[in-house]
Image 1: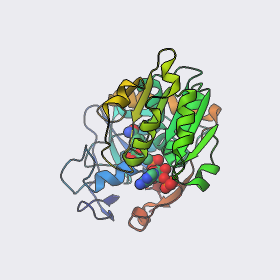
Image 2 (image 1 turned 120 degrees about the vertical axis):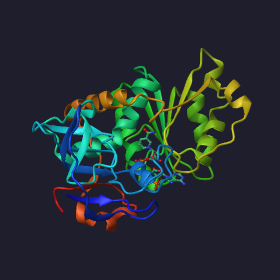
Image 3 (image 1 turned 90 degrees about the vertical axis):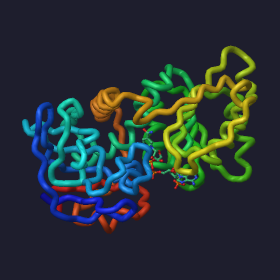
Image 4 (image 1 turned 180 degrees about the horizontal axis):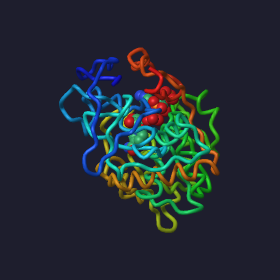
Length: 316
Ligand SMILES: NC(=O)c1ccc[n+]([C@@H]2O[C@H](COP(=O)([O-])OP(=O)(O)OC[C@H]3O[C@@H](n4cnc5c(N)ncnc54)[C@H](OP(=O)(O)O)[C@@H]3O)[C@@H](O)[C@H]2O)c1
């Protein structure tokens, strides 16, 4: 079968012939129509991700939309190595599939799930967002951050705060407060925390997270009532580490947690994906994407588009 193949870590995958998967007990072969090219897929193909296997010679892609052996249209997560989703066929455990609503095209469903699952499970399972709470999203201009704003509202957030480094991109977003992390951002950040923030979803970490945590420390809202600032770490686009002063924890009700593979069970992620897709037609969730035939995977691999690429293995 035709597949994208990671022949060496750090080199863009090449189109080639790969052996077709065969289903064993509890598995199904999915004919893939849409496979998202997301940051984690690139990180795994570079060998940099914390769940990397350590050996090249695999098909990349951790999720996708396609048709299973019974002819059902499904979204699937975590196909069995070495069969990733960027191939005409992938090998998937039967309990790693959820149905795709008829109203969603293959590409749209893949784009929504890959961008929205992080915040769907982080808000529902990790932060346990309550209706009427305030959510701040760091990295709101990215695919995942943009959907996090909509999903926070869907779960009943009273106010959503978008934080990012690019003012023009922030201007395009729907949020109650938008803060560009320019030199003069500390005052508006402090003002937001003084009015109360319940949950932070942080896709960026590094220096931007340090600024946000400094603004959160000692905020006025935490001196009244019972503060609980649930700060959920999701990505490290701006750096792997941050300095953390002890008083930041003491003065802010700060509860630091992560959300991802290892801090959430794989089963919960799959269930969350099913919930997200089922809710999408009525909620009107959208995540901008561009469809790309599998044959162009090498060309687009290292580009940084404004929208998520969805690789289409049924268009070679
Ligand atoms: N834990 C999870 O479950 C989970 C799930 C999905 C994604 N993630 C992670 O979250 C991060 C974002 O994912 P995505 O899908 O939204 O990616 P994306 O669409 O490529 O967006 C990247 C975001 O990171 C920002 N960014 C990149 N480098 C930065 C820097 N040095 N300083 C400040 N901001 C920076 C970008 O800002 P501009 O718009 O200004 O370029 C943009 O907002 C990735 O690290 C990804 O691995 C984690």
